[in-house]
Amino acid sequence: MLQLLKNYISKRTDLSQKDIEVICNYFVSQKTSRNQVLINYYDVCYQYFFINKGCIRLYTINKEGIETSRYFAFESMFCTALPSFIDQKPACEYLQTIEASELLVISRDDFYKLVDRYPEFNNIYREILELGFITAQKRIYGFQGFDALEKVQWLIKNQPNLLLRVSNKMAASYLGISPSTLSRVKKML
Image (spheres, rainbow, N blue to C red):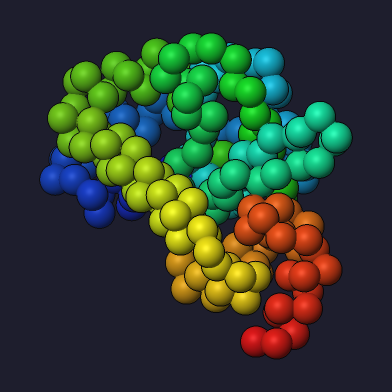
């Protein structure tokens, strides 16, 4: 169950196999069902998740009950409700597995112990933060002025797994378009 995480760390660091084993031993295996909520809106996030198998979605629900997907993570990716994880305040969003998933979970305290103990692990954390920021910025600023077709084309280019693994309703909410518009655009491609 730890092999994917070991590979992830090995590709990004020069850590010895012994150090990688030490790091991986901080992670605990967790199997989840489809649509299992890992973090609720008012929860404070105390865990970071590495995805062995499955998909995690971050989303919000507005006053009218409409869900807006903010982020999707797939195999070999880390995911958490990051603002809550960092500042230890309520998440104000939901973290949910949308497929039956196999996760590796590390506590916040242990995660930061590893960040402090291993500069290489700190570099992985920084890479996660930077890539997340860049993806969010590209999505936000790239979508300004995009029509529905351009949004879907952007998604195919930048996050091709998403349309293959996520329902039209969730993908549409991520793109800021209606599910019927997404269906119509997909037929055009």
